[in-house]
Amino acid sequence: DAKTTQPPSMDCAEGRAANLPCNHSTISGNEYVYWYRQIHSQGPQYIIHGLKNNETNEMASLIITEDRKSSTLILPHATLRDTAVYYCIVKPGNNRKLIWGLGTSLAVNP
Amino acid sequence: ETGVTQTPRHLVMGMTNKKSLKCEQHLGHNAMYWYKQSAKKPLELMFVYSLEERVENNSVPSRFSPECPNSSHLFLHLHTLQPEDSALYLCASSPGGSGTGELFFGEGSRLTVL
Image (cartoon, rainbow over all chains, first blue to last red; front, side, top):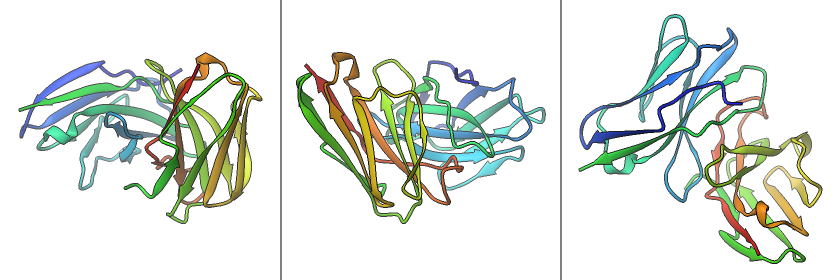
């Protein structure tokens, strides 16, 4: 079973920030938070991951709460090409298995 | 382009057919994976190969047979499949062995079993 909870769908206006929440209240100390997205008819694409500190790369920012029980993926200026299903996953550092949920379907509207 | 190429992109087969899915990665990664994605269901890990050795087999029926001849190629041999096996089959690779969570996926092979 997935160890994360995400809203099934969200909308965002083009050019605005998209903030995608994820709850992982049972996360353990050695588990990382990973984010992927899957654009229709394509394979999933890695976005970002973190353990306890906030992380930023060219695609997005990841904000993890101090208690690590939830996180938010931020797409700072959403475009139509960001329309996709976004998956939040927790993974132990020493385990190869990613447990996928159903993710959040993000629709970026013009 | 992710550096992971899957062929064919679409496959229709009868329950008595034998077919194979092919995956090739051009990233120099050491680990390769097969995932199954059925409609309205989460991705399911099927097989993991690390340095050409199978390290995980998640109770997959024997009608699915993986093969990893080298670190760049991965096959999924299919025989006597059932209609419920219709799904998107995704191949992925990862750097630094199979413990990382940063996977690079191909675009998938859409399988329909009649």
